[in-house]
Image 1 (cartoon, rainbow, N blue to C red):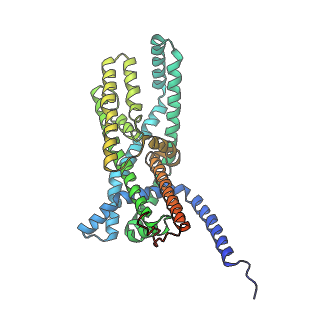
Image 2 (cartoon, one colour):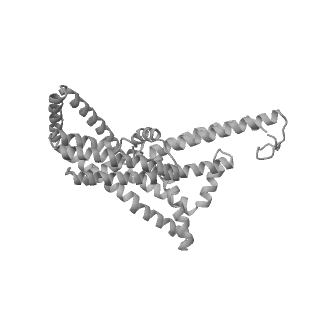
Image 3 (tube, rainbow, N blue to C red):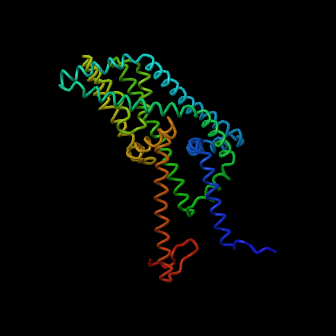
Amino acid sequence: MATPLYNNKERNRVTFVLLIILGGFILYSVRGIFGAILGTIVMYTIFRPMFLYIMDKWKLQKNFAAIFIILFSFLVIILPILGVGSMVVSKIVEIQENPQWIQQVIQQISDFAGDKLHQPDLIENVLRNILSSAGNIFTSLLSGAANLLLSISVMYFLLYFALVDYKQFEAGLFRFAPFRQENALRFGRELRNITYSNVLGQGLISLIQGSLVTLGYWYFNFNDPIFWGVISAILSFIPVVGAPMIFVPASIWAIVQGDNFNGIGMLLFGLIFISNIDNVLRLIIAKRVGNIHPIITIIGVIIGIPLFGLMGLVYGPLLLSYFLITVRIYETNKMAEKRLERLRREDIPFNQKGEDMDPHL
């Protein structure tokens, strides 16, 4: 009989290395649907309470309850997103086919800056930089739209089985989570709160700000109030600066055109009402659900848009928030490990959960 090449310890090490290599290949292979996987987590977190409710109250089987959740979420979330995307694409195509009005805007603002500020090239350079940046952002959004159908299909496929087998799904998450049970529960609670805050809370803020921009544009006689309200709602996922990116340039343009009443009126309406709605609602959401710092949201959006396209406005901040939650739990585990090590060195008895049994400590 041949002598084994590896002992048990070496076999475990080789197996671990193989797991790392195969896991790396798997992660590389699914990189294109990572947004769909993250979307499944978000949708499961949001609709799990409704899923359990309709099974309990309506006495539906798990399969039918899951199908109902999928249809409902498609109607209230996915369909509006697809409609907004179609509207934005149509407007971009219209601008590309008729770019003369953009050049006219730049020229008129440059003339205004030359007369009033004696710096004729300043505004033109700033506007060109803004338009260039906006073009890059929209290019990223449109490139993400090409894979949107595949991502939605994969997301709903995963969501269906996650809901139907929700007990096994959650048990598997707890089993493979690299945390102690109490930390795994804490991670789940914080993940739920952060998801509610960023998706539902920020979605409410965006809807209100977009509606106010539409109302302001209509009242002060600006063009395309519905379109710019929708764009404001999208940009409102960026805290503080989102909605002002729409109404501030429009107000300045109206003033440059000599329409001082509407320009100043829209500017004041935006600064007093639209911007402050953001601050007030964020405080309410932070107290009731969970708080995501504006800096985390902005950095998350910058990270998310190149990775996930339009959905990066939501996924980016969530991904960064999940990372920070994991870091905090890792620090908690390290502190617990150091405390257990200290107890062992001092020969203080502790129970199986790692809690010392000395009541004076």
